[in-house]
Amino acid sequence: MYINYLKIFKGSEQIRNIVFKKGANFIVDITPFTMGTESGNNVGKTTILRLIDYCLGSEGTDIYSDTEFRGNRNTELKSYLEVNNFIIELSIIDSSGNNEYILKRNFLSRRRKLYSINDKILIKSDFLEKLNHILFDNKNNKPSFRYLISKFIRNTPHKMSNTLRYLHTSTTDATYESVHLFLFGISLSPELITEKSWLESKLNSEKDVFKRITEDGNSESSLKQALSIIRNDIKRLTKEKEDFNISQSQEKDITELNELRYDIAKLSANLGYHETKLKLINENLEELKNSKNSYDVNAIRDIYDEAKLYIPELQKRFEDVLVFHNSMIDSKIQFLSKDIPVVTESIVINRRKLRTKMTREKELSLVLNKIFKISDYDELIMELNKKYELKGSKEERHSQVIELNKSIEEKSERLKDINAKLEELEPSLEENLQSFNLIFKSFSKALYDEEFYASYDKINGNYKFSINNIDANVGGGKKKGQIAAFDLAYIKFCDENHIVAPKFVLHDSTEDVSINQLMIINELANEIDGQYIVAVLRDKFSGDIEQINIIEDNKIIELSQDDKLFRF
Image 1 (spheres, rainbow, N blue to C red):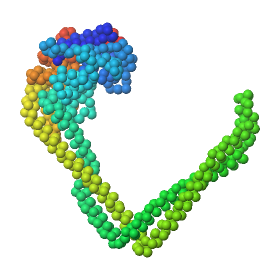
Image 2 (cartoon, helix red, strand yellow):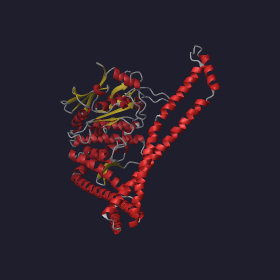
Image 3 (cartoon, one colour):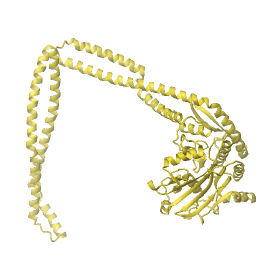
Image 4 (spheres, rainbow, N blue to C red):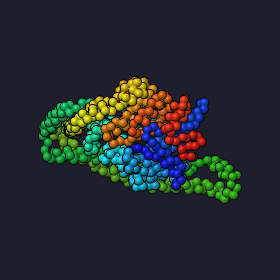
């Protein structure tokens, strides 16, 4: 599919109609260069690329936001686009000219946001899925449309600096693998792609958990040995318990004794709480009673006299103020005093219960100590209980380790099966890469007299693609030229191998690409059956008549400070 035109409507009024052609398409900023000022700022040449991206499903925030500083928004432009109901219309068309798709977007929010294909309004997910089918013949939506189309719309510094890894910096190797394999004509079933990605993600997570829970002597073997020792300890302690030869009646007494001790501890805590509460109430009451008789009458009179100066009509007499003060204290005393009977009763009840429990506890202890030393028995039971708790903890951890290890083995085996299916496709991948590299090295040699090529490495079953024969310290302009060679080569590769993909590529930030390289890129773009759409500065091509002719032959729109894109 080619880009046919981009129209901008302000309400019903058409303010731009940018028609595209095959070959090079220059979006030209004709603002003159002045000392200390770079032309091209804010005229809208990059915005055209972003509007095309917007019609192809981007969020569109970069249209009125600084891409480097996300917080910097041109709120005035955003409001202008919304209030005036701007609509962006993008036409894409196939080589026959018989199949045209008109995509429409607006800048309204929520339910009023427009996603339209040939006047059929869609929800966002269906809109993107439909575009995936139209532009990539990808009916299964794996990889996602936005992952794929981003290679063809390089409208950010990040995309213009990364030939293959052009997606967000947090994108996983698994995602890049599925994208690159698809772009080079290798696609598994969507179910397998989804499963492979899920397996790789889960395996990484489970291996991380496995590493954490098996640290510090918690490996399967270590846990097995620890459990063996703990079970022997339990066996020994149980035998010692049996040696006490406790009868059923004595067992019942021991149980009662333990319950009594628990109740005594609970009652003691409750009694302490209420005794403290009563003490605090009495202390507060004492302070209130003292304050009633010890306040500074002269200080209160001074406050009263000062108030009279500001409020001459003050109706209250000084004596009334004193009465009010005392009544407030009386109210507090009355409020606190209400709690005394309740708290006192709780103290009496708790003391009575505590005496009863302690008497019974003493009786049972005397009886049992005549038969055996109860403290030794208690200590044994405590140690036995600790061993049972430790056994339960170790068994739980051992079970986790076994289950997790089994899960990792099963997932690894399944991933191995999927990777085996991928390996069956490797001959096709190698053939496609060879076909692509013939074009890529030819284009890069024309640009830099260097032969770049794409290849892949298999790391833990994952296919990781890279570009080779590139100087690690390659300059920005040379890198961008290499990306242009790659993208144009890819269009020609798809054409020769009948792979369905966009026949256009959008580039920005070419200011640091040399004029000679730009002229060669222009020649390459006009040789292929595709479109190279790029934002350029007019001053870049002001050297001679040949350069001027290139601009004139390939420009599709001119913008300036006096004629900005939105005419805003």
